[in-house]
Length: 547
Image (cartoon, rainbow, N blue to C red; front, side):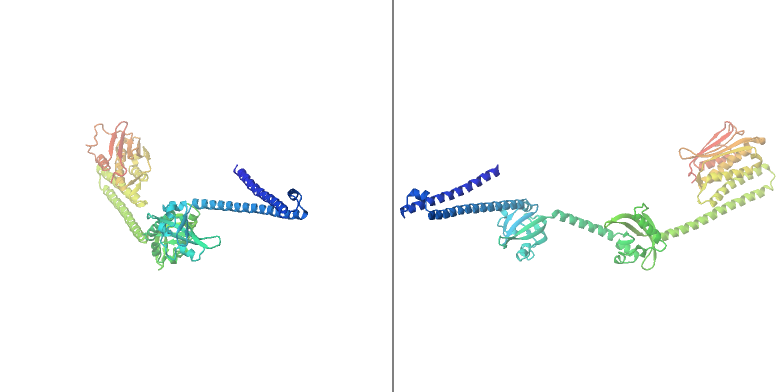
């Protein structure tokens, strides 16, 4: 509709101009005819109007055509001027819209630093309205640290520079600090003369704040890393990319001397292959233990032990290994001393077990010699019982001497040896007795093993001597099991003649049973005696209770 109305208006204007030209030509024709009739007395008015002479017709035609031509020319000039004004107005409108809606703050300043215009963003940024800003000095409403100095962007533009871009901190009238990128360019008239300056203000306050925070964070981490009490090293492709002061101090070099060099420069020649292989496997993503130790050779040729905790990281777009390195040379020396002392103590303890076993064997041999001069069977039997007790203790020391541990023995192996010795000791009796052994694979410390072995010695010896009189056949069962509550249950039973019904373990006068009761108490255990169908002893005790 608007375009249609515009075309109608254009046609109306053209028609008026053309009609004015026609009227002007007609008026001229009539005046010319009247002039010839009344001034020169040439013919009649109708004759002059409608039938002029050839010469008059030619002259009038030329003049009328000229009038019509200039009418058309005037119309065309009017149209061109109108279009030019419309185009200029449209351009100004578009520029105003761009200026006012720009994302950055903008202002136009004249050569005397008076503000001519500001846009909406500049107004929001500074808190100054467009009316307040107009004709104020630029530094009055948005002052910066270089205002009214030779470094001012406006001054530099007026000095001839075509474009000036600077980072600046501007201050609003209420004291708020705004970090900006200020871009200044000349504002020229139609003849190219500089009549002012256009300034663009890009607010980068948030970015600057983030940069400052990042810089402060990096500075904190730098201080932590550089002043850490352990070495921190980043290695990429077997070369040092970062070394802190502590790592450089351990190596005896400066940080600058190490950066960019191969790690082989420091690693002890016997450990190079292992360390290099670990490094490249870790770079490939292979899962390896982070912590391990190796040796380095420092600048002075001294061999130092270091312990590193390695982590795969990304360094400048490529995989690298971050190493936390601790000098453990003194710890290694201390460990070596402790290990040497431990080996020495182990050797000494083995020797003690060996000598105790030998001494117990000598005592047993002395008792055996003594029995040769005794004819009383009861005394011989008592001495023999003592020999077996001594043997049971000697066996413990023998097992400890031959084991890897100097404080614990495999009780299942020990029990097999003890039972074998007792069967051999009572060979004449044991031939007719069936023996069953049911023992778990249990380890005991020496404080538990010796009382337990003496208890078993007494109970088996008692069964072999008294449960099967007159060569009677029978069955002897020995068991040692772990119970559900973590305790051990020792069982020794036989199907022999059994104990008297009135026997009380707490008041018994026999040495063997007194030893059994006493040793059970030493183990903090509980003992039960069952007399149905023979004899059955059950003793419940803790594996570590002999301490």
